[in-house]
Image (cartoon, rainbow, N blue to C red):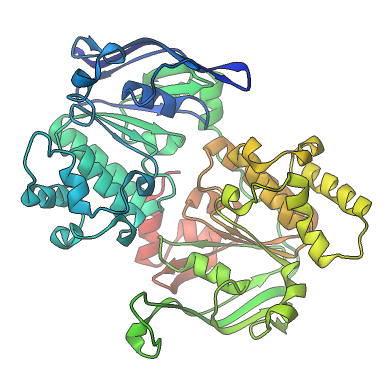
Length: 526
């Protein structure tokens, strides 16, 4: 079968800090009509750069050089002038980006943004917009047309992006990490949708991802990229069952190791009784009526044993993060929270401050939680200067050096700034900042969601080692059931602010009772 798209010896180099970086190295691959080709690899491997180059969203300049060929319909896309390119980009070849919120215009409603995709060749057509939203599985499409991006969930925004991408019935759809940061059920829905659309319209799909698990069932062939080079490509079954390259084997085997050590104590470190969290509705001023608020967490009660890990799972909006924020008083709540038999619920900020060093939190996005203006030394030691004012400057420096080593980094990095580090390194820095205060309980809110699989495994290994060494207690919040399975002793399944199941890990994964839990497990890519 003749190829729809051919990439031949694609090479991309650029200058950075007076050094020449080879982002893509003489990469070649083909995509057939109706085929799904997956490009997989770690962050920085060149996957997205390859896709952007195909779309001509990256162009040669004085600091960036592109060579090779991208052949579509007997023409080289890299050599086309803008007038010819505009007839292909967004029409014959479309692209879905990783984060729809940054791709959608916050000032325009959904109808206007979909219409823009085809208004050059066709007049604005409301019915076509509705049909497109129906096609991608958005409920109440007539109402959604008047909504703005911020009024939609992450999964709905991604569906809108897909609707825009297929508006002109493209021959090729490029999906760049389309499921990152989505919960397991939405992730599966989006992948199933892409596969359904591909087969229905005989459309080719170029799927870019760092997660090998999600390509196993959807792709026909796989290209494995490492540091800008395609090190292996073959049909999907052969890549998974008979991988040739050591890097491919590493990706396939980079599942997080499971916790093996047992907690020997039975001391309850945290006891929560009838915890509720309310959020004021945007249109409410009085906050006195039932309709004035939304209840995100509904009368939850649970306990955590010292040295154990409680995994909290559930879809987006189930109340997971609200629990975490309520426990450390970042949001107001009702009910009682006992830490080591001390009721901390009603403590004001001043009286709660001594407990903050014992209960630390690590957030989803370390880059957003690390000050860009401070060095790593200042970021990590900041808590010591607040909670341990009696320590000398030398003691603080020595403690900081030790803790950065404990998380697997070199103390020479302490003089650098957050932007100089990878996502995995920044997450290690966030862990170090929490650990330096010698906490007994650490709450981790989606700390691995934006990391590739190998880095996820490294972070899990680090957390397990630290837990065993320091007898730490974790509350681990995630939509990634692979990570939850690796770290947790007990699992709490959340739905719409309620606990639908709370059980030991083995029972949850082998004998789930609730239908919602079963649905989550069936949606997961292990």
